[in-house]
Image (cartoon, rainbow, N blue to C red; front, side, top):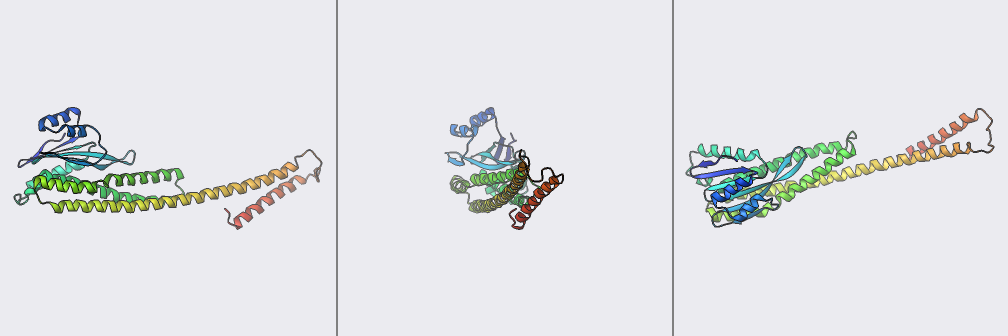
Length: 309
């Protein structure tokens, strides 16, 4: 649990994966509705906004990158806003919240025109800062994602990489980009609902800030769509190259099978328990061996000239 950040009557408390006792303390201290208690205690998969008489409750999901699995996970944010108090709860630890709190505290305390910026002394503005920073994080992740795709494209044409290794990377990229889209897409509607609810609740005219969030959601989704197309295109290239390589291997195996079959046929004839021409001639063995090698070379030469392999 973070310490309470208080400035001129406005307070912000943050919890990271709170225990049942901490959730109970929040409920008892701030008279939180039992439905909010259930949402905080249990995992919620959908974004939502609930407006009560004295507070607004939000559930938002932002990506959390797991370095161990190289997968994006869903970091659930539960946010309760009162007139002059905000509580934020996250499932996973994130340094961004602490950075926001420090930056917000320093910005307000150094603001000489605080009277003109009273709107900043509100949970409404803090909510905007949280979402804005998390969206910047998503945009940065997408930028890195596209850089990784460029490196992966080079690996696709690099024969030193194994097909299994490339396939695992490809599937992981496709999984991550689809996950990001499904995480961000519902927030287009949620941002509009937040804007309406908070304006009627606080009365501040901060349309320009939430218009900025709408712009960022559009930018994120546009970037995700382009990245998905690039990922799908790279996947098709990989599949095509894999098919070409597989066909080439099959063709080579077919040629080897034919060569071995001819050798087996010739050696089989001279292995029969019947009288054959030249069977008593001591130079017949190198002659038969030469014929076998000559036929094998002719077959390989024809196949190579026809570019069948």
